[in-house]
Amino acid sequence: MKIIIGSKNPAKILAVERGFSGYEAEVISKNVPSGVSDQPFSDEETIKGAINRAFAALEAAGGHIGIGLEGGVQQTDYGLFLCNWGALIEDGKPPIIGGGARIPLPKEVSLRLLAGEELGPVMDNYAEKANIRKNEGAVGIFTNGQVNRAEMFSHVMQLLIGQYEYGKRG
Image (cartoon, rainbow, N blue to C red):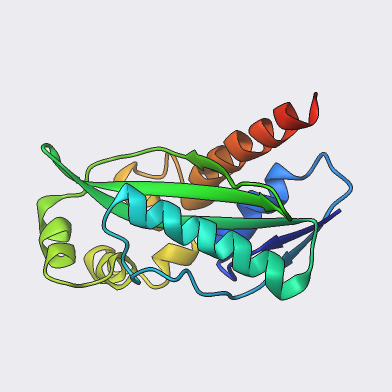
């Protein structure tokens, strides 16, 4: 089975590889556009980005399954929260969608995002580290390393693959 992920981000690739570790699968990463803002600002936009990436990945490399994983933020009455969504696409079938963990962002980070900045560079500046989005992610910083970005997206992959397997039962 050929699995195409629509990203070159190491944390996302690792999540897909972990998710399909029990399969005879080749995982290929392709840099494809999300078709949404660089900083998605709602569940709807983040889901759309994941679906767009999954379709574009499948189209770019002609695999059996396309995967899109997208991080964003969602405004709530309790502040701005991290959100993450994934989509699994098989040719000719509707997308399978799953979402993951959420945590609130500190006010100083939220204010910068609301002013138009993107989370990745804001986090690098905030934590005084480089490439946080490719490593532990904001979730890793704000959970004191208890959950990193690859683990967060691994959970999303479990939700996607579980639905995929459930759909194959009948």
